[in-house]
Structures are given as C-alpha cells and as structure tokens.
Amino acid sequence: MSLSKQHELHTRRYGRNVGVGLLLVGVIAIVFGLTVVKVTRGDYETPATTTVQE
Image 1 (tube, rainbow, N blue to C red):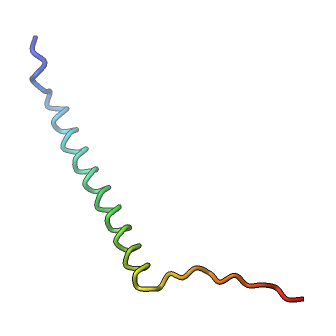
Image 2 (cartoon, one colour):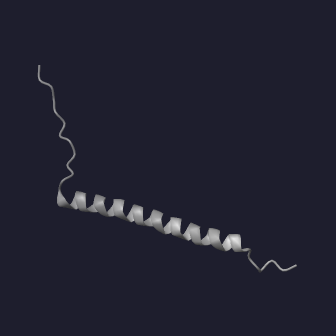
Image 3 (cartoon, helix red, strand yellow):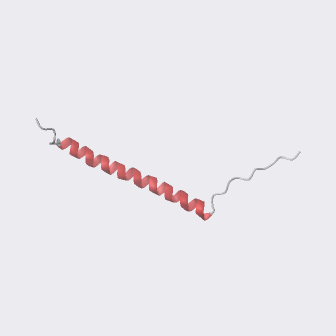
C-alpha cells in the first residue's frame, strides 16, 4: 500500500489551515503596523513620574 496518495479530507484541511495562517499573519501585521505608526508619530509618551509634596 502506497502512502503517497492523500485523502480528499487532508487536502481540504490543508487549504483551510493555510487560510487561517494567512489571516493570523495579516492581523499580526496590522497590529504591528499600527504600533510602529503610533510610536514614530510621537503619540506614545511614557507617563511622567509625579512626586507628592507634603
């Protein structure tokens, strides 16, 4: 018996897995891009430490 022939179910799963993987990479790229734009534009500033004077 040859192991080279794939069942039709495996072909569909592979296609679905590739689609989900591409979708995940796209979401990560969007979040990374938004983060880079926000940081380079200067909107992100670390909060200044305030001292309480008594």
